[in-house]
Each structure stands twice: as structure tokens, then as C-alpha cells.
Amino acid sequence: MKHVLYGKCVKCGKTYEATPNLTTCECGGILDIVYDYDYIKSQLTKEKLAERRNNSMWRYRELLPVEDTTADTPLRVGWSPLYEADRLAAELGIKKLYVKDDGVNPTASLKDRASAMAVAKAREAGAKVIACSSTGNAASSLAGNAAAAGLKTYIFVPSRAPKGKVAQLMTFGATVISVQGSYEETFELSEAAIDKWGWYNRNAAINPYLSEGKKTVGLEIMEQLQWKAPDYIAISVGDGCTIAGLWKGLKDLYAIGFIDKLPRLISAQAAGCCPLNRAIAENKPWHPMEENTLADSIAVGVPRNADKALMAIRESNGLVVNVTDEEIMAAQKLLGRTCGVFGEPAGVAGSAGLKKLCEEGKIEKDATVVSVVTGNGLKDVANAIKACGEPISIPGRMDLLLEEFDKRGIVVE
Ligand SMILES: *Cc1c(COP(=O)(O)O)cnc(C)c1O
Ligand SMILES: [Zn+2]
Image 1 (cartoon, protein in one colour):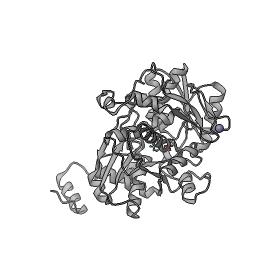
Image 2: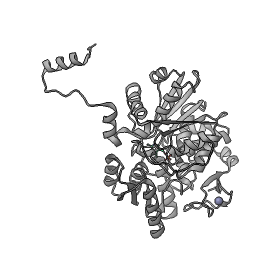
Image 3: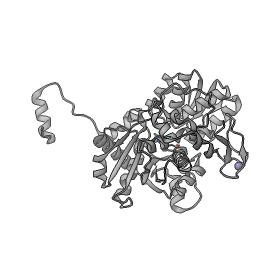
Image 4: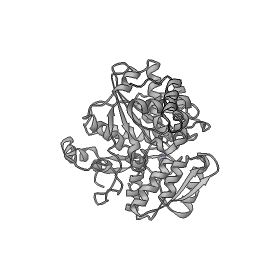
């Protein structure tokens, strides 16, 4: 790969040749993929991108750590819509708001970006089997993207994973191990099994290429905004790979001169599980927390990518905000009602956080903000119904319909 220099440990600085099987540093630190930006600048221009017909994450090949000869992965991942959310902006009292709906990805979450990268790198490594542990979405996205590429998957999920995600796994033909325990215990078992059988490792904080897949969400936001950086980007945070990836994408674009300003990140975590945000707020090292939230995808008590995530939030002069389950459910309703976007609880946590910061007066009224919805609400229907309630249920009779409307004060326009 002419454009990739090496993998560099974020803890000790040791560098490693960028082979497809790259994992963590011998010191235990996480690796970051380092690029030759001068070379990339000579290869990629905004005009060249604008002409490109490839509406998937692979349109940014020059900025992705794959060989020229590696094929695009089969499912269409990325190039999700960036909606102008004027009604929601008005309700929040800010000038301009965009909603990036990553729930429209093939397996309905942002994780497809990392899983597509995992499949591409597994193919380069000549692997036939990929494995991961996941709160649910990394799992279903890996299972789907691997199935499309003809690779076998072993997936470890905590037994609390919502049915929608487990249904996806079973449909995609994964071998699924539902671990009766926390995400922490699930992760440890997956690492032991990967060690024993030598499968290709799609655990996001272990495999440094996965953040590179996730960074495409940042590349897209900027291209969709015609390279005019917003003031803030709000996103939900669990392990920390997503926010770190987003930040990497933004920094890449800054390094090659495509943008001249970097947005501030808004890191949203659940109040019942916010080890990273707590570390930032208290300016102390992070400590494990219980996993106490209905937002299962960000219920991560022991974040696996703490170093990169904390660095991203600090470097961007970012804001942290913790949202309760009630605030998450309210945001689900609000996004649905004002934008027609259906997010899962973790998917809307960024928007819930943004709403809270707006109410606290922490976002300037003339700010331009992007809120990323990271996963689709259909993955977790039970919680959506909990958040938004049951429909009017009556036999098929007009008099009963009138009675119900009357009772509920519904005035028909
Ligand atoms: C995984 C996930 C996140 C958080 O990503 P991390 O890399 O774990 O921080 C947020 N929202 C959804 C829907 C997810 O699946
Ligand atoms: Zn190291």
C-alpha cells in the first residue's frame, strides 16, 4: 500500500508494518494507521471525488488502508443521507442542523463501515473465518458483510442483545454464542476463542483497520457539506471506536487540505454507563462502570478503545454529555416526529445529548451541527414501543373511531 506508512502505537509510539493481520502493540496499546498525506494529496482531489459514481464508503479508497487490488466488498455500505433537519433545529433553537442517518446501511447500523473493512482485510489475509464479540450491531454487520463475501463467522454477544439483532445474526448464517454475562465477559471469551482457533479478529479496538472503515462517516459528512466543516458533530459513544474513527476521518481531510477547520465533537454516553465522559469531565483516568442503560449498543462498562476516544474528544476541544434512558426515549420520539428518522436507543443518544446541551445553553444559537444517528430503530422494536406508546386499538367501526378521537381530544384537520 503506497499511501500507508505503518501502524503506530498510540501509547508507546512503536511502529509496525501494515500487514492485514495487524492487531495491538506488544505493550498492549492500540495501533493507529499512519498515512503518507503528501502521496494522497498527489492522488486525490475534490474534483476527482465529485465525479466519482461509487456511492459507497469505497469512494474514498485513496484514504483507506487497502491494496489497490482488493475488491470493494459486496454490500453497499456508506454514503448514507445527510438530511437538513430544519424543524428539529427550530425546536432545539439552533441555526442549522443536519441528521446523518447511518441506520440505512445494509445491516442498519454504522458498524457496517467497520465490518466491510474487516471483510476486505480478511480477504487480503486469505482468512476464511472472521470472529468478533459485540453488543449486537458489530455482530450483525459482520455476519451480513461476511455472508455476502462468502466468509464464515463466529459471533459472541451478551445474552441481553435485542431480538432484532440476534434475528439478523441467525439469518446471515453466523454461528452465534450468546454469553450469559456482561459485554466484558463476552469480549474476554471471544478473545480466548480467537486465540485458540486463529480466526480473523474483528474486535474493533484490537484490529486497527476498523476505525479506518468507521472514519468514512466523517469523510462523507464533509463531502456532503461541500467541505464546509460544521461547528459540532454529535455522536454516541460505547467502546469509543466510532468517535475515534470519525475524528480520524476529519483529521485526514484537514491534513490533505480538503477542510480548513475541525469541528468540535460531542460525545454522548448513557448516564448509567459513561466511563469515558466521566474521565473527561473529571480529568482523570477512566474507570469501569456498570452497564446500566436500555441503549444496549453503548452499554460498555469497560471501553476497549478508551485511549483513542479520549484523545479524539480532547483534541477536538469536545463536549461530553450523559443522557438518561428517559432522555434517550424522548429523543427517539423527537427524531421520528420532526425528521422521519427511526433510530435505536444508542442510535439517537447523540441527538439526545445535543438536545440536552442546547437546553443547558452550551451550544451557540448560530451554530451548525451534525447529529449522527448510528443505528436503526427496527433493531429494537420493544424499546421503541416503550418510548412512543401503543396505537389506538378499536374494532372497525366509525362510531368507535369518533368516540376515541373525542376522548383523546384529536381534532381532525
Ligand atoms: C457501536 C455503536 C455505537 C458506539 O460505537 P463505539 O465504537 O462502541 O463507541 C453507537 N451507536 C450504535 C447504534 C452502535 O451500534
Ligand atoms: Zn506500544
